[in-house]
Length: 260
Image 1 (spheres, one colour):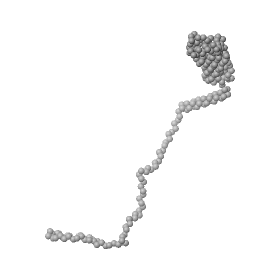
Image 2 (cartoon, helix red, strand yellow):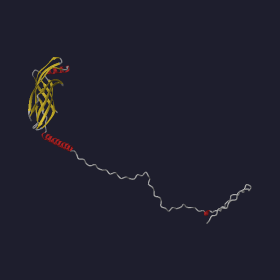
Image 3 (cartoon, one colour):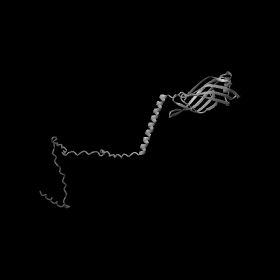
Image 4 (cartoon, helix red, strand yellow):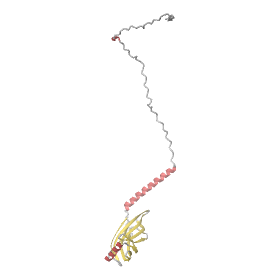
């Protein structure tokens, strides 16, 4: 269809009066409640949009491939040291087991120290506190082992009165075969030995009663020998002696004990 242009409007002159038309009112037709049409939203038959994955979810990554380093060749010096350590350990274990077997089979015993005889010839005081004495005893060293030899490398013997040292003597080293005994005469001299007043009074009293009590303390370093096996240890002996008075004092009773 062709649309025609609207007719031109006549010009308005100033003398022409303007007339205002009231706005036209559209007539509203009443609508019954039964004629209300409820419009439904348009149904979109298209497929729903795919759900987008949240951005904060991390996708699993493939683990990195680890390249194992090539095994290095061990230095020959390390092999030599390890071999020597192994041989040394086996030698130690062997000697330990051998020593244990020997000790269980042979059952080594410690040497014994004894004083079977003694002689007290002199006791006198130059002053109330200075003592002089002359004492000799017979020392008996015995080795009770059947297959083990013993060597006494260091021997120190001390004479005491009421645990007060009054004389010291060193015995020369010697060796003993299995089941061997050795008698050694030991001469103990006391010259101007200081003695507390209570000890001096007690010694004078014992001389008057014809019963003098002396103590002997001895220390020995013994080296035991079994073939090519050698081991050393210390022995400590303690003897209690009861003597008659000088000048012909003799041994009345004694008791000795030796411990490691």
